[in-house]
Image (cartoon, rainbow, N blue to C red; front, side, top):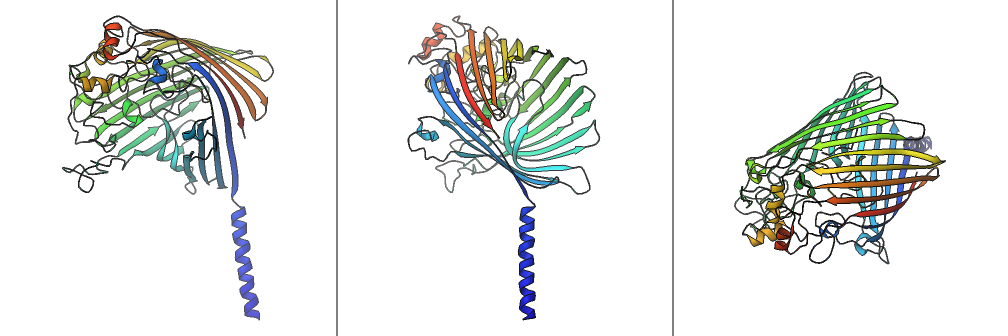
Length: 529
């Protein structure tokens, strides 16, 4: 009997111990619901089918959409916190769901697989130290105090280590693997490969970065550097040989990243025809940055980002290098924050055979550009955006803004005005719009709306400019619920001479040199907890 009682006592003790351990984990949930009603006409060059350039262009995120759309998104983040030294986080995204669209789960019935894993990582601290580590799928952001990163702003697999030396100096080191084992080789080959071009061969990209935040009284400065080794098959989809074809008529489908890591149109000869040379060695990419934020002269605030990037491959036709600087000056008043913004990014010269002179970038899909909510990737709540592209390479601009003006309780407004020009040579645009004598190549490179691959929704030359106007209104109805309304309008002045975007060029590809003003109005309802 005593033995049975002892065994029972041990079992109960173990059970209570396990319950105690389970209860020691603190579970936290955070989330966000967005309901967005959007109406707009996103103009540009009109194609032969009458669609506007932005709506029908393959580079546009809103290709083929109606002028009025309703979409929604849910974010759900769960944290399991054991202590200040150990926790785990998983972050899901449900949507974007477009009302009525079956593939997004918005049609009648609503049963679709639309749950996405955004992030999943663990945080832990090395015992008896202040060294913090994060392992897993996490937010990858390069430092920025102005526009948000124009190089890397997305989620990816990485290991980051952060150490704080004192109140003024810290250091973060990162190793990330954004791509690996995605190249499937030749589809019709023996055991998945032909002539040695086997699947998953030299298709990885590995990155390492160092970020050193320096914080002083009223001054923040962050120098940083990042290197990436780029496998020759990193961007291949299995139909052809990774970087061999570039953007040619051979039909290679590219991941979104490749457009920012290669010249416009891929590797080209001086006359614009494709090089068609396979690469056998890893490419080398390097980015350097220096960002700063000065509030020591309060109520003035001065901030800047200075970035340089280059990527070089075994053949110089594929190379890309360039720089981008941005700055802002603000003055904080009781009723609002007026400010001036400016930026300049290097652009392509007129010779396609020497690669690109625009700064390379990875993915910036999760960067919300604070300078521009419509021309670039700036809208925070499911509105139409990126009329010029995700990021600012190949452009320059100057603007004025008035933020957080409030005339009534819980209601604030912000106004933006930007004048934006291009820094790319008109010769490059002319080359892409002029037939090269290769009809198949021309048809693959230039769509019906005057855009070549890698040019983005709109490629601005030194002869082009646009004026962007934006107004945002935010009403905090409840502590966790707000209504956000944004209106934006762009006036484009594009070089319609016969040598660039004019009739002689556009007629050659069945298009029209008509230019329409894009605009958008978005009403969003946001519930957060």
